[in-house]
Length: 105
Figure: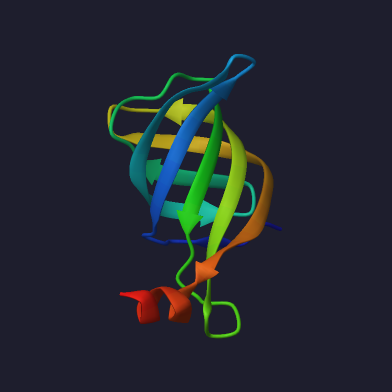
């Protein structure tokens, strides 16, 4: 049974096709499960669009490495400001070291 989480996390999304990345935008999750993600969008997304979504994860790996939840998904429902995407694949990816970035500032 999928677990679900009412999360508000910043994200970036890109519509991808056989021609490459077509368009992109910023948004914020409103709800996630292991099967779907619902998020706010800058504009209505086309039904059936393939997406790559990078969600800024709120927890650091080993208290120092930023994480992103990377999702490959398909838009299954859309309104002017919300999209529901069925998750096809997901993985966590690391970002640059948070402490090293803070020290450089």
